[in-house]
Image (cartoon, rainbow, N blue to C red; front, side, top):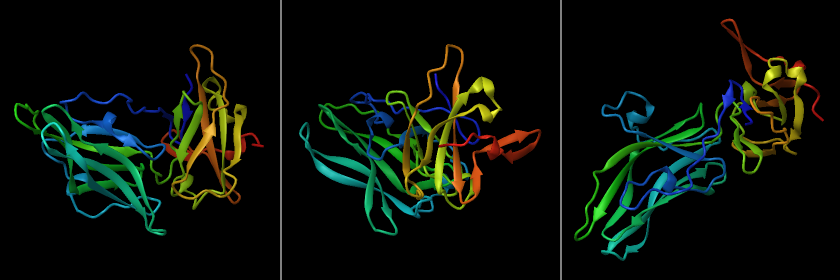
Length: 284
């Protein structure tokens, strides 16, 4: 198995389930249609007593991400459920670019029409929050069931739903898809704490050789062709070989801004410092 070394450690890809939930059961992450590449869905049970954190404060203010996108959620009527004449709706999670005014749909979740019930969802317009540090949109969602004659419904279920994969604040958080042999990440707002990135370089190496980064191998150099902007979704071909059984590879990304070059941090005793960029081989 191949692993991806981020600025803090090993990053594992959480794959969104392909199969949907069963009819007559609450909708979940597997029922979402993800439109934007690199976004994954996660959910957690809503706590009986909501702690005093940002998502529970319910300010009602539309959240904005690190790329100046203003998020919103809306319900769209898409017809009638023929089973018993109930409205059939779709939920859209979207954002508006504050500079261009263009709207982009991130993901959609449609009601499910069954023989005697409709599995649906509702959201709390005040309970939506963007975690700028980790690049994650978080919101309240209540899974509901509407019924006709003879239908039996489950109790409403309230969840905290999150969409991960937006531009984080500092770190380059990579995901890996073994089916297409590529690495992907969203350009951070302050990559490795630098004002912006002129370009990135990707390297691979064997975990056995760590922490000696002089033994790493260039994978992709000086990408993209023009300076990336916050939130750009970059894909790099994974050219690292499959390691022998019982071994693993790492992949690390270096960022260049002018004459500055960084590729994460290291812990020496109780002190956190940047890794020495001179240890990386020339990428060309």
